[in-house]
Length: 406
Image 1 (cartoon, one colour):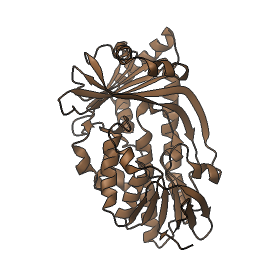
Image 2 (cartoon, helix red, strand yellow):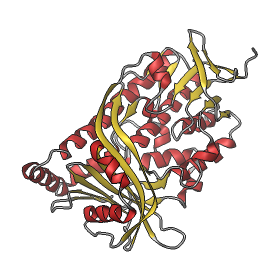
Image 3 (cartoon, helix red, strand yellow):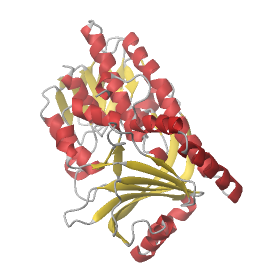
Image 4 (cartoon, helix red, strand yellow):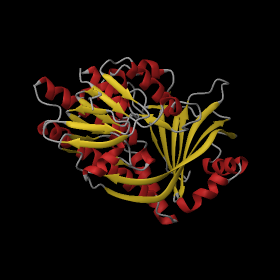
């Protein structure tokens, strides 16, 4: 059997993290083959995925450096502030950036991110994209990696990257053992139109059953105000909520919103997905690294999942580029150890923080609610604490790879 393709890196998974990694590597002169089992025409179709993602300031810097920001700019809604409240009771926190800091991030429909990502990648000669492809075997040794596809094609490289998401078969086959547990909750996703403008405010409303997030989107072509809803419900209640007639569902959503946007209506079908947690401190071994949800899957409570994966991308591009400029193999153990040291702590801190928040706000009762609101009021009155949390939300804390800096 002849070799179909030989490259520096094989990336298994061509989603928002895997394909962005390929673009970043190409900009540094590093070739890659991206293998993905999805069909781009399907995952970019209207109505395929109603999810939206908050892109932090640091992630926006990455998109800027990779040539994606210009095409994305008109598709995203700036987040001017974030309102955090315990059940719409008094004592909320308002996070607003200081003058000169810009927005707290931008909201994008995942479909728009994919469209621009695929377009930019298609113009990179160093990226070979193999969609609708499945992996049969993966082999690694001291000299390189070989991936055989189910159609018989054989790919060789010097480094294998697992970017397949939470259910990564490459991670599991390699014997990584992440800590994992289920929240026994489900996130219900829907698009809303509403009477009043959201004023570019992202709302995180905490209820004992789980967070209820309203994320600002740009007005539609008819000028209607829009937001993305992420409503966390207990798994035992999810089927009932999903089965509600549209009018009843809208009524339940409106009640939890406290009327802040006036009359609302559904703008996109409801979808849902199960919420769980996993994290592995070990993200590299012989000629293999993990990025994105393959390494860390968390609750969407703070909207940091994709941003954490993009931080993996920026760090991996930097360590591979610097190593190869020194004449090192991209699969060199020293290079991969540097990536692991850089990413392990940050991944743990962000994943752990979202888990703590989920559990803290999930404690029912009047006394826990009062204590939470007391703590939130303290944060509201402390510029230092608010600045700390905003820097974390913007992804601008810690030692940043060059691609995440302005």
